[in-house]
Image (tube, rainbow, N blue to C red):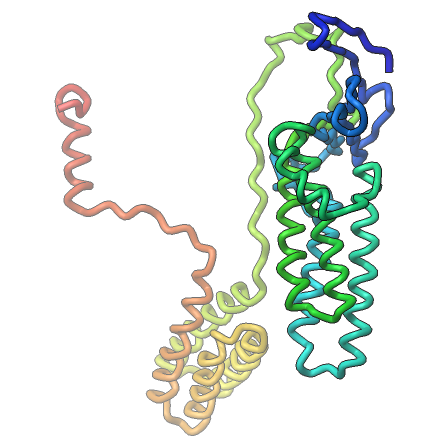
Amino acid sequence: MPAAMTRASDRAWRIETRLSPAQLKLEPGDALIYRAVAADRRPGDAGVASSDTFFVEIVGPGDVALAGVEMPPDRERYALSEAMIVLKIERLQARERSMPRAAIEEAAGNIASEQRAVRANFIFLLGGEIQDEEVEAETSSEISEGRFANKARQEIVAATVLMGRVERALVAVSTKEALPLAREAVRALQRAFGHSRYLLRALPARARIDPARRGSGDLATAADWTRALAPPAADPQTEAARTALSDLIAIARALEARSDRAETMSRLERLAEQVLAAAATAPDLQPAARDVLSARDAASAGEIDKARAALRRAAVPLVARAQRGRIDGALVRRDAARLAGAAAIAPGGGRQ
């Protein structure tokens, strides 16, 4: 990319350039990952330094952009893939005792191959392989002291080293050794991807802003708007309990009035079927179903008092279910209500 260089001294140079995501024609769901690398006249790696790794993610309409590593799971592609390795190792470890040795070796080998593929993605992201992990570990102090001045890259390098150790542990069929290393790799990736992240939100076509129309609206046409509240979702069991409770009250009155016995028995049969159907998916209504059946049997035997008592017992769970979703109003004590009325008619409009 073209860049402008300013040399303040022989030891202080400044280079400025511009990277435009718009020119790259990025679309929602794309991600741009970049860093700057520079070298001075010192030979070898001693004169090489790189900046932090920056992530530019294009968030599509409707996606929620969250800070740091708290991105939606489908956006944490790399950390999520290593987290799946952790999950598979945990599942294998939980089943090891009940599996034959050959099956354990095959499962561990499959996870090791998946770990190798995940590690290869990160090595591609870093731009190369780590030739000697021991040398890399020995020079980690130089990284922290600012040789690379790149915390995100340091965390990714550490994660790839851990992934290699996880793979070797799985090849040796040692999930006990592999699991802590895989978990630490996930934590390193989360720290890396939570550093230097930019989020660009893409607007849908209908919501794009036209600069030419700014300030051109007519305030006289502005009006308030009230959002219509959507009705609550219907609960079949609650509705059935309310209908059954209404029928139960009518049947109880018919029993008390000694109405037509055949008609009352028919209504009890329908009520019993209705409550039994609702109790099939609502366990809290099963006592009501048993009591309604008891009321039916008692009424059939001519024991009206027992039938009425059974209906009273059946009403308790029906009332509890029928009152679900209700909105309780604030109760005002009677003394407080009288005080409010006296204040309203007092001189001065109640200010006293």
